[in-house]
Amino acid sequence: MPRGSAHPAQGAMESTSSTPSSVTPQWDVFPQKTLGPIDITILVLYFVFVLAVGLWSMWKTQRSTVKGYFLAGGQMVWWPVGASLFASNVGSGHFIGLAGSGAASGIAATAYEWNGMFSVLVLAWLFLPIYIAAGVTTMPEYLRKRFGGKRIQIFLAILYLFIYIFTKISVDMYAGALFIQQALHWDLYIAVAGLLAITAVYTVAGGLAAVIYTDALQTLIMLVGAISLMVFSFVEVGGLEGLQAKYFDAIPSTRKENSSCGLPREDAFHIFRDPVNSDLPWPGVLVGMTIPSLWYWCTDQVIVQRSLAAKNLSHAKGGSLMTSYLKILPLFMMVMPGMISRVLFPDLVACAEPEICQKICGNPSGCSDIAYPKLVIELLPVGLRGLMMAVMIAALMSSLTSIFNSASTIFTMDLWKHFRPRCSEWELMIVGRVFVLLLTVVSILWIPLVQAGQGGQLFIYIQSISSYLQPPVAMVFILGCFWKRANEKGAFWGLVLGLLMGVIRMVLDFIFPEPQCGERDTRPGVLRYMHYLYFSMVLAAVSTLTVLFVSLLTEPPSEEMISRLTWFTRGDPPAKKDLAVSTSPDTAKGAREAERPALQIDISIASENSTNDNKLMFSDGL
Image (cartoon, rainbow, N blue to C red; front, side, top):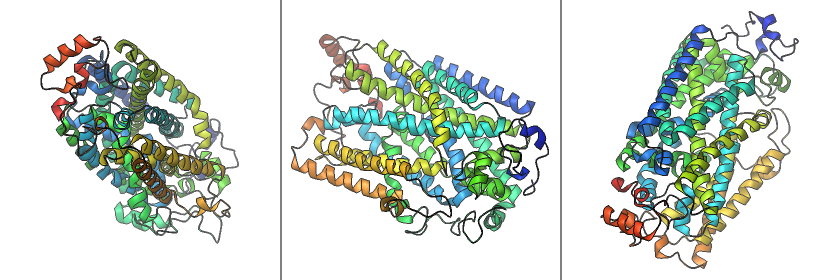
């Protein structure tokens, strides 16, 4: 499309758009093309196919046990595990956010993806053997076994649920809603509520097996659709050389003179940037970015739960390797297409005047986040547009199914069993399903706040919040896994102090938002001079020192809090009371049945109420 060309059906579009008539056609936010009958047919066939895969997985796997529902029976081979890890990570927020960051500032956001390439391998080779030896289902449960007591487990379980509901779900909801609104002109709440309903049905009915099998299908769809759009985008701009030449000329026609507003960054094609005056300083990329990345890939319930569902450790490692290779792709599938979108639609994607941006996309901070939807609607031919709509819906559903299932697991195993430690397995199943429905309702109610609260670059918003909340948790896990002297008091106060600092910084960010281009920066010094990646490093250091000093000044942990719970003790023989992992399962089962009721299970807090089947879940991977 020629730059700045007029909308061929402007009069018709104005009747359905809230854009004032005074806005010139090239600033029209809505796409110039719509989905045709073929596109709609592809969408319908996609839903039918995914539903069939979900029903097949429900029939194939055992869902009547807690292990079967939450960990897919521990029977997943490497390729669906790897596909599920990638699909759970790359949701709508990545398509919208990474392309938007590419349009706004260049390729630097790729550092987050390439950092994850190594973190997912750290999970499989260093952390997963510890989790398997410990026989845990949730990450707060690991900390309870490692440090004792329940305050850390309850503290983290609640924190994780807040992170899931108010950052992960809200971000994916906003990104998916933005795409649907740009592409289809559907009512925002009807479209998103329908997607959430379908997502919840998959998760409630099928458990983790349905989630993992549908993730594998949707990963394939995402790759095919995104690679197709990548090819069309590079052809349109004249290849990589054309992008490098034209990106720096992608300047909006209306902007403030004698300022840098609306101009592309000079370091747009650099990942490692100035340590003081850049948007992503290189020391922060190397260190500050790695800490939240380790939290996400090595301790986040959504990711670890998929690896624990592998049939053994070798398959879990294979899945991580597959995911690591796939993480190379977002630079070419998302970031660079976002940059191409700026080249093709500079007045829309690169708008620099707050008033104009408000008219284009409803966000005065900028409209870079519409870069990917704009490409899909404008560049792809009939049929492929429908495929890419399926890709975006797949990304939204994949991420949400993962979060719904993992949040349900945490609530059921870490919170519900805390208050009802002797509840039946059937009760746990019912509670897990009901909680998914409650999450769905909360997500729908949260949409207006998400729509009003997101500003600037969506992906940067995600990463800044992560840098405020995740480093203390990451350091407690790392020290718990690799330092035997760490104890409960040190871990608890390290978490409390670190998260208190992080929450204060996060609240200040909301109270004093970053000024728009051309405005004077009057924020407090801690916001103005300390990048969020540097703050991540400070948080990690404070939390680490707190854990070290408090642990050394208090009593060491008992032997049962170290055995099979750290890297150096993961090969210790099982404790005598841990009959379920003994070499004689039948004998252990008989002894356990003689001691305790058969309906009690050890999959969370009440470890004394365990059965042989649940404790054996990973014995073949040791």
